[in-house]
Image 1 (tube, helix red, strand yellow):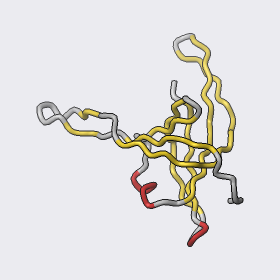
Image 2 (cartoon, helix red, strand yellow):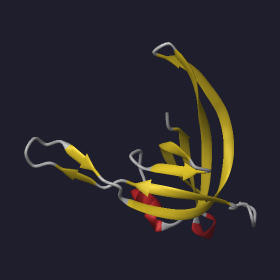
Image 3 (tube, one colour):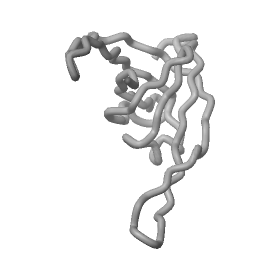
Image 4 (cartoon, one colour):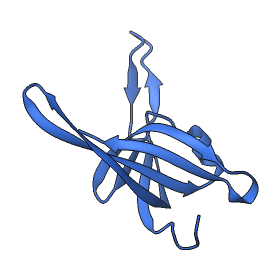
Length: 110
């Protein structure tokens, strides 16, 4: 990671999930929001057809400096960048020591 490469501001939202005791359903709330700076790598765009409607999904790779809170980020979390919401597909921890960083693969929310 080069100095100055973490120049994009994003918001990571981790929803709160509580179990409804009556029927076992999960209720999700707004949850915690984390503002972080990252580097973004644009990947391919998928086009597809759903219910006879043509659409596309952006795929991005977000690269963050390692912090302990990334251990709680999973596929239920979302990332908001440039007023667009992305669903997390995977979280990868790369490097070691003080050169550790986190790659988050995400696609646009349709």
